[in-house]
Image 1 (cartoon, rainbow, N blue to C red):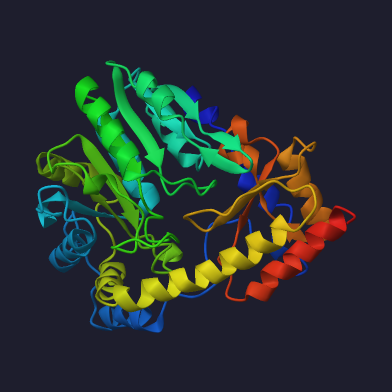
Image 2: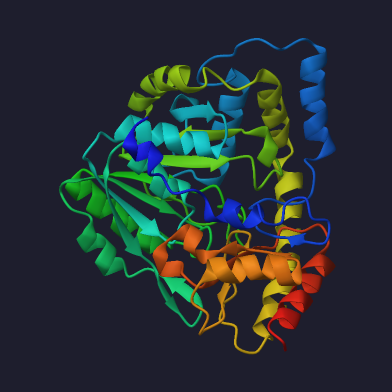
Length: 389
């Protein structure tokens, strides 16, 4: 086996979770998913597809109905600077957001290419270019009073003429950091100058709590032209409560789409038809499903972060987007040790900051996507008891 693969670092989230999986007494908030099932109307669409015997291969790029549904959905939110929106010939359906990201990296990165990633970030975004043999550089957000911020000038200086790909995730997992449109415009201008591709992981864009016209976070699609060197990744997982369905999509320049279909053939061939039928219905009912999800998540966010901010000594801020509270207890610099102690001694399951980059050592991520906000408060009580407060 390739040494690159052998040397990939195992997930520190799984390392902690494995210590508590199967224990009924653990309140688990370590994984990034809601504990609410997919809406019934979406599930019924998949059931009907299976009842009709739709168990065969589909087009590599996805069902016509789903690609056009995605295009219309994206155009409503992101008409773009020229009003063209997102055409269906820019869309590829993928086996989840993870698969979409890996496909994009496979399509754009050769061995020894210079790749820049903004961290802390979900570990897959660092591992994927490494798998391709890239020369990886990271640029860290800075934590100021519990809020993570980007030094835009530092980033623009780090995007070099030889930089093949810039990878960023906003709203960000785990920090909740979100890019503004002025920042996106500056980054896009710099990448146009250097010929650098942008891979924007925007799967949390709908989970945004600041009031906006389109009820979502700013997107690179708001400022970019269709032919810009931009690939945007989305997923049904978070905003439609479909994590286990493994259904996502890519938006890319139209000249790239057919080649992406070939790459999908050599990875997964296609997504299951029944899952795609569920995706069609999820989009048809997005105006009902997603606002309800976001409204509930806001209650959960305010409940959890408000309670944590009252705990003496903790450092954190209210996240603008995403589904995570990211906090630290100054003076305790090893998040992995803390997370394992919390599982063993308090029955509380959180993700260690080290899973998202060395600059997040000592931090803890708490997923607040819970059907019952009271469950979050019970977790805070366990944390305070463990802290001996």
